[in-house]
Image (cartoon, rainbow, N blue to C red; front, side, top):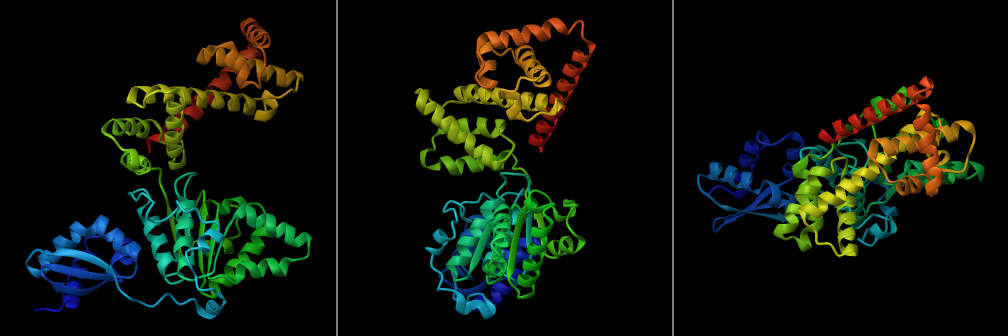
Length: 448
């Protein structure tokens, strides 16, 4: 009989044209056929993450391909085969053995693992690249740059990489751009810049979150640029996240932008309905019931902006139902979500009014009483009353706890002046147009 190793090589040739290049590189390229006995074909893979992913997601395709290759059906098992740990270069002696407890020391969230990440078409490439980087740092995608709007899973992937690489004995430094900037400023102030630089340059992997925070911070960006170059030239892995691609960071120097674009730049798109539903199922799995499934469908339909809001909505709604003694049903969830949507619309209105009058939200609801701030506050009262039919007590609460009489006075003042003050009418019309525009942008984004 043909050896399992050769059978698997031929099967890999067929699999390579059936899956994406990223999936093949990440999940299949380092596998090998081990044994074929009693109609069970055993495939060796580098680690438990790959074994679990293949078992859950590619097993049917692998079985079919093997059957086509061998001319008969067989069960498939994925097992971890021994292999050398990825080389860490000259710094290997500086590690301390790498145990799972190191993840705690590095403040990696225990929930943010590859197993806990729901993979879909919207994030598949970013996920596959992150796994590849975790298992083969510095060899394939360096730097790896992941960008998306807030709450889509960028930080989750950084922490997942941190869990794997610290477990493998590598020295990892995770930092947010804000933390990096603050520590750099402190180092300059205390004449400790060399010590600060050595902290980041003596690592195997740098995980750098929210890089967009450094835009317009010229000195900090220069320090980051030199840190990046030294790590990259020593074949150290760099993983960066941001809310936009390097090409959209217009204030970056062309040199730094070209460095960031020199590896793999990939985005994470907002999750589609099926992905949102799978995320909710994963969160609610211990208590899943047929009735709860209907509840999750409603949440997945109503909450579309990002994963963080989706998970937050489930926690909020569960807590509301528990505290009020209300049973979770699609009907009660619709009611609660409508209330939450109303609150969101009120926040949008207040922000639009503040922006129109060139105020901050704090000034609008605060104690300032100059003519322009008072006018803005009265306009906000009028719009909440007319556009959303808010009770006076609710308006007072939204505007910093003002009493019923104050709110009524503000509303009546604007209502009486509208017919005789064209300038005031223009203010109202412009703010309504701004609100409609922002709502339209939000709805278009949710529909993606």
